[in-house]
Length: 279
Ligand SMILES: [Ca+2]
Image (cartoon, rainbow, N blue to C red):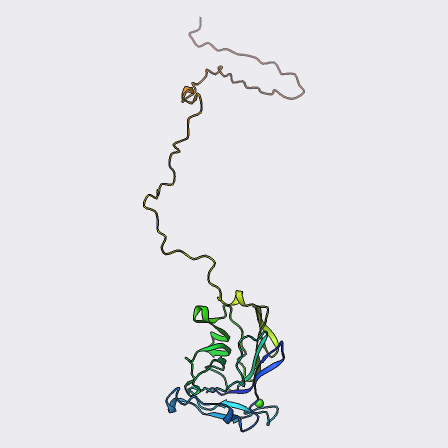
C-alpha cells in the first residue's frame, strides 16, 4: 500500500522574494483550488485524494492530501496566479510523507505550461519535475528533470540524487540559481549541488562527426611509404657491407699453484721406474 501525503508546496523567486504559489492544504477549500484530471484515466483507475493530517502527526490541524487506494493513479493541478519565465533564483519546495513502507511509487511536483487540467497526467509536457521516486531496493532517487526546448527533451540529472525512504515527513527543496548552479536539499540539508552545465546535458557536444565527410578515394592505407626526395648520404655505397675479421694473437693459458704459505718447498724426490728385464 502506498499512502503519500503532500502537506506543503511553495514555488518562489528568491531574488525578489516573490512567492508565485503556495499551498498548505490546511483548509477544506483546497478542493476548489485544485483540479482532479478526470479525463486522464478511466474512473476506476483514478484514486481518491483524502484530506487528512495522517496516522501520526505533530499538529492535527496541519493537514495534507493523501493517496488513499493502492495501485491507482493520482494527479492534481492548480493554476499559478501569474506565469513567469525569467525568474533569477527559483525555489521549488514541498513536503511529503510515506506513512507505509513504499514498494513502488513517487511523489513529484511539476511546473506546467498552459494545459487542459482535466487531462493532466504523466505524459503532459512540463518545464521542471522534482521529487522522490522509489521502486524496489535498487531504484531510489530524487528526480530533478528540466525540459530543454533546444533539444526538445526532458533532461535527467546525470548523477543520482539521494532520497528518504522512511515513514517520516521530509522537506524537498530545489534551488535553481541565477549563476547557473543548483542545490537540492532534503530537510534543508544539501544533498546535491553544482553547475547546471556539468549535471545535465544541456549543451550539444563541442565536436560532432560530419556525416558528409568520407575517406578520399586516393587515401593510402600503407603505414610507411618511401620519401621520393630522400637521398643516400655521400659515400654510402663505398662502405663495405661486412668488415673482415682481424687475426688475433695466440692465447696462452697459465696456472699457478701455491705450495704452502711461509715455508720453503720441501725437497721433491723424483723416482723413475723402468720396466724391463733385469740385466
Ligand atoms: Ca499542511
